Length: 307
Image 1: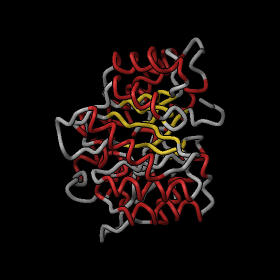
Image 2: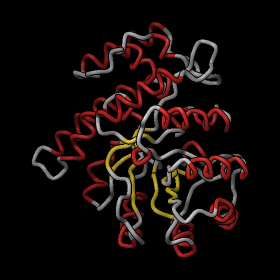
Image 3: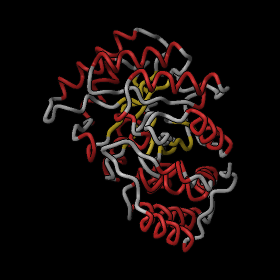
Image 4: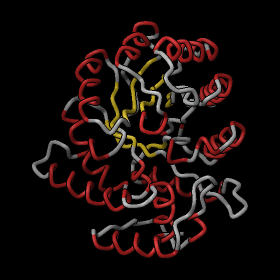
């Protein structure tokens, strides 16, 4: 497998700003993505924290086109293209590849539970074959706490054997270090790239041969996360990891997506950023105040986020 020019480092599942009428806000979206790129963070648009599964296929296609037309480089994009419906996954993946975004992050079909590895293999296989693009690189997205559809080691092994030039890596959001470690030990020697699903496991993942993390808090705390990625061999790496964990713990006290958007609104002095689509619910004013106080206590900042 050719591993040149493969994504690595810190990626963020970019939060999607909505207007008060709940339509995607393209202006805020481009501005936030440019800020992240300026912090050396890649854009895993249409991820869990993007509220991707609260948006239509057409809305996601338009948002991707908007970023590209704004000059966001395709090399910094890893769109999420996995949907519950096979045909939606094919359409989004085709669109991404046609626009030059060859690296995609793909959820398994997540509506039906208790499905077999055989069923999941057929789904990924069908998508790959229908897209039919030699340049496609799929990063499978393992997030059983949310999807309830795990991607087993045996399934990865089978996919790698069938599609060695397409199956490129994984985002492991299991929250289980032993699972990430098993993926590293079993598949990293085959050129399979492992991203931790949060910065909590960034240092351990890098020490195990992984390539980085794709993390919700990359939306709001990109600088320190990138600095750990760049300096993970340094003597103070464990101290940096502890500081990241402290900030992560603040956000974990709240519903994550509303808290991320509220924090951007607080530090950008732009309260409309706090809008989420139902069924999610915005933080209350009291919760926003508690979030701001807790972030202040850990020395949190978002330099350059102001409009």
